[in-house]
Image (cartoon, rainbow, N blue to C red; front, side):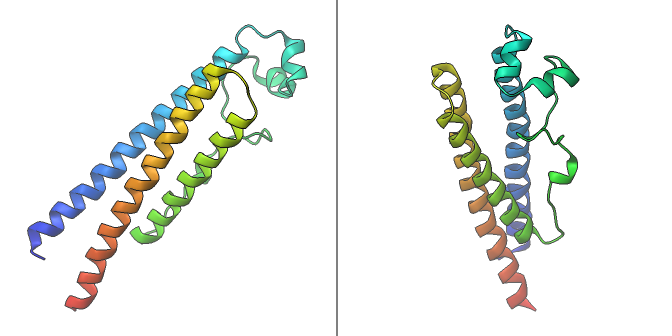
Length: 150
């Protein structure tokens, strides 16, 4: 493989990571909008009955990213390691967890609009998983080539 091919591979991997990262931020926006629309007109009693009374007590209807148990989101959830193969495996696992979470949420509702939105997000996680897998294969081939060249 010529030096140009290495540079090209590096640019492909960076582009995939940038595209997926950008889309993941859009997912946050979609989920936030979905949540806002669901709780916008709910009474405090309805919010309490839905199990989100503690959120309402602390944040009103404002969006505050936390998990289902109320644990606030933190950058500590983002995994990274200097080895790109390890990091890509983490990315693959994260995409599968997100896909499974969307599936669970879909199973918990009968609202067509919510199901369609979550189904779209679930499908994008599958695409991300595929793109990460392709990138992993390219990076592994690149690293194997470097090892054999030594």
